[in-house]
Every structure is written in structure tokens, then in C-alpha cells.
Amino acid sequence: MQEKKIVKKIIYYDSKSDLEIIKKYQDLIIYVYNLLKKYPSIEQFNLVNDTKSTLLSGLKSLVYVKNTYGKTDKLKHLMDAQAKLSILMILVRIAIKSKYITKQNYTAWSYKIAEINDMLQKWIRSCQRP
Image (cartoon, rainbow, N blue to C red; front, top):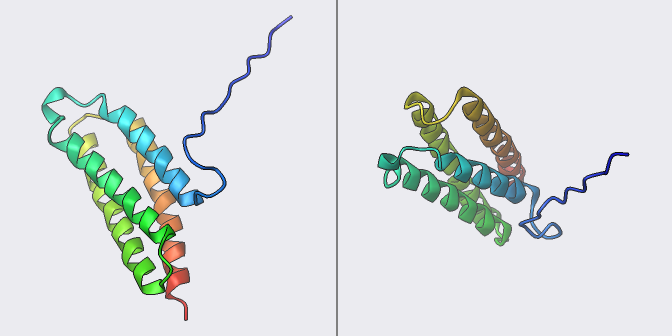
């Protein structure tokens, strides 16, 4: 008789109050932090730090959006988050060209960024409506 393994998913965010986009962004951060461990030590103070600061800055913008009420302020933070994603995509391209990540990592990372970017674009459009 086989035993059933019970696997509990660790929830590292407040599942009730966090927005879906923030949850996805947190998943992206965890994914990227695991990849950054594979980068050569020479990049620890350059590309790794730039990637981490861009990730955290983008998350900060999303948290500001969540806690902002005016459409103008929301748009400002949404555009900032979108800019951070664009920078992050450039950093991903640098990583693949430098052979710090595999094509599979590149595809997964790019997909996560695209998914978040799509959510951001929908949110931006909803804020731009009169």
C-alpha cells in the first residue's frame, strides 16, 4: 500500500488582502533570487545587485499603487512598475547572453514578466478610463 505524501504549499503573503499581481510579483522574486545564486561570484556586486534592486523597486511601486486612492497617483506608480519590468527584461537578456541562465530559465522568467506586464497594462487602462 502506498502512502500519500501531503505537500503543503508555504504561503508567504497574506492571501486575503494581497492583490493577485502582488502575489505573482512575489513568486517572480523568489524565482529570480534562486536563479541569481547561480550567477558567477564576479557578478554579485553588479548584475545581481541591479536585478535585486529593480525587483524590489517594482514591488514597492505595486504596494504604493495598492495603498493609493487617486487615479493620477495610481497611474504614476503603475507606470513606474511597468518601467521596472522593462528594465528587468533587459537584465534577463543580459543574463542569457552572458550564459548565466539557461534558455529554459530565460523562457520561464520572461513568461512571468509578460504575465505581470499584462496585468499592469489592464490596470493602467482601467485607471485611464474617465
